Length: 453
View 1: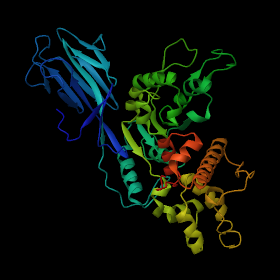
View 2: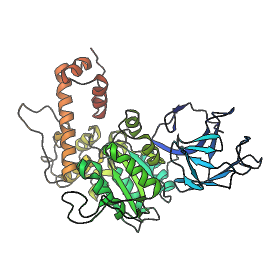
View 3: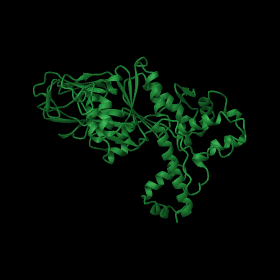
View 4: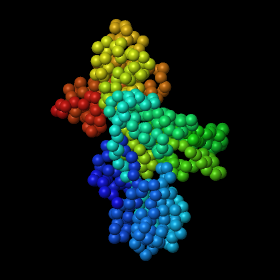
C-alpha cells in the first residue's frame, strides 16, 4: 500500500508525484484497486507479486470470484509478466483472457470480478555525488554533474529505458554514449536516430525499415535503426518531434520487443535493444498539452535524467575548456578572456563552448585577435540594420541551423528589450508573443528583466 507523503497527481495512465523535481527520477509500479469496498487501495510491485484469496498471498483479495492462488505478476527487466495460476474464473488484461501476458501502462487487470489498474508512479531519486569529475565523455566538477555521474553508474548496467531532458547542446548525446560504454552492451552497436533531422514522411522507414516496393521510391529493402541497434543501444534524439501517429507503433515495438518493416507481411522481427530517448522539451508538459502520448512517456521514463545548462554550472568552465582543447588552455587565457567566458550566458551550452574553444585555442596567445569581441556573434552589442548573423557553414546542417536560430532569438530579444526599455508587457505586444512565452525565452537566454512597466 502506498505510504508516501507526497500528493499524487492522477492522470489517465499513471501517477506523478507533485514534489518530483524531475532532475533525477525513477518509476515505481503498482496495482490500484478499482472496484469493491477497498477501492483506491494501492499495491506496489517489486520483483514479483502473487494475488489470491489465500492468506499467504502478497495481495489477499477476499472475493467469491477470486481463486485461492489466482495469479502472479513478475518483473522481467522493464516489463511485467502476468501468469494465471489455473484460476476458476480466469485472468483478463483489458478484456482479453490470458494464461500469460504483459502489462502496459494503464492496463486493466481483471481477477475474477475484481479490477486492478496497472500504473507507474514517477518518484524523485536522492543521489549522492561521486568524487570524480569525469565519466566517459562527460566532464564536470559541479554537484549536479557529479550526481549525474553517480546515477549513470547506477543505471548503466541495467537494460532499463532512460529519458534524457535538457536544452540543445547540453550533452544529452555524450550522456547516452557514456551509458552505452559502461553497459554490458558496450561491444554492440550504438545507433543514433534524430527525429528532427528526418522529414516526417520518412521517419517510420528510417526507424523500422521497409521492404522493396513498400512505397514509391522503395527500390530496395532498408534496415531501420531499431534493427541495426540489435544487441546494442538505440539513442532516439529529439523524441518530442516524433509524430503522434507513429508513437503507438514505437510503444508497441518497445512493449512487445518486435516490429515489422513497412510493407512486411511475414513474421515480426524480434529485437534486443536498449532504448535511450532525449528531448529538448519538458516531455511531461508535452503529454499534458496533448502533443505526446502519456503511455509512451511512461514507457520511456523508467529513469529520467535532466542535464543542467552550462550557465547553471559555470564552475565547470575551466575543466570543460581544457577537455575540449585537449590541453591546458584555461591557464593560458588572459584575465579578460576568462571573464568573458564566465560572464557569457552560453545559450548554445557545451556545443557553443566547443566552437568557441576551437577558435580560441589557435589565437589565445595573440591578444589583438583574442579580444573582448571574441564571443560577439553570441552576446555582442546590437548590429546595424542590414547586418546579418554570422553562420559557420562548415558544421553539420542541424548544428548550424540550431546555432543560427539561437543567435537570431537572442539578437531579436535583446533589441526588443532595448526598444521597449525592459517593459515586458509592451515587448510581448510588439512581438506578438504570449507574455509567459516571452518570459520563458528571456530566461532561456539569461535576459530576464525586473522592470515591468
